[in-house]
Image (cartoon, rainbow, N blue to C red; front, top):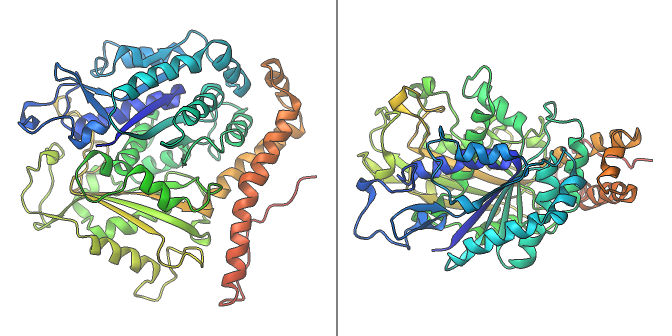
Length: 505
């Protein structure tokens, strides 16, 4: 068993963390107080159970998340420990850190607080305590949004220190990036560019997310007219769960953190993949869908199931590598309707056969070379060819949160099968360009710069961040597209490069 420690930074990181740990408890039949249900206890239960990669078990039998929560605003800690929260006793009290003053939506204010108030030292002390409970730590998941001051400024300092102390461990960073239209504060572009430019060497993978894509997913897929952050966070939690199944359950084809990094990151400059989830369906429509392995794989690559708003250019871009993490069973009783409250985690459903790896690979190959002669949905860089896939399979169906005791149905349709995808694609460049252009517009008009200067920022740091973002990320992805274009023009001279960026004067 290889353990994973999660770190939740800022309001967004803490809120996603609440929903994520609720889901993990549901999937492993752990009660809100940390005790495992009697039906799941057995003589063979022990420290080597795969789910203990995310939980540590006390002598009293309580399963405690290997997690640290940090926010400068005390509201996050209050939500975690509120008397109305059924999971208030799940986390160790020392793993929840809060302060009485927030970072004012300012990257430099967050950075200053991290140093002057000893926040990084306190967080690292909690992380070391968690690490001492591990026998073979494999890495970290660090959750944050980069639009605010805590996630960007304090988040960068924490990430840098984790990298310094645990340089041989994998660091995955699910990161909520500014959306196209929705914004929580007007200076999001400043914070996001500073955070991105100054953390390029900190994480192994930065999983790119944005709230607008999650919002559209709730409206279009789940038919929720007015989604709340609760809906959005549950979508994100489902995606993180889907991409960590092989770390928490026995698997046919394993995909550890280091293996995912090795397969997805050919060059450290390109470590910003997108993630997707399928199926994401309205519970009322589940009887009209089969959700076969083939259908689930096909759904992964549709823009409405990708948790990042890359516009309409996804199929015009090129993939460098893809990890598909499949979970569940083949159903030998295709007409059976799965109950919303069925405990599929305990293996109680009959007619189950493991998902065959060749079914997954056949579906992926069909996406690359459709039977009908239609254009390929998945196009890798020419020098990658057809070998850009990493597949993981776990014989464990998904669980969907719901509270049947208060007549609250699951927020999305249940299924015997689910897949998560981590896709390294040049399409992510559009997210960086969008934020970079907003940064330039604010900077050109010197808007709000005084606030950052008062928080011990310097004008040179604006120029440095701008150059790092342009040269270190945007230009690199454009160069990759140019190389692909030169190679592919040998087969199709009509190809052109769209969305080329120009040097600002």
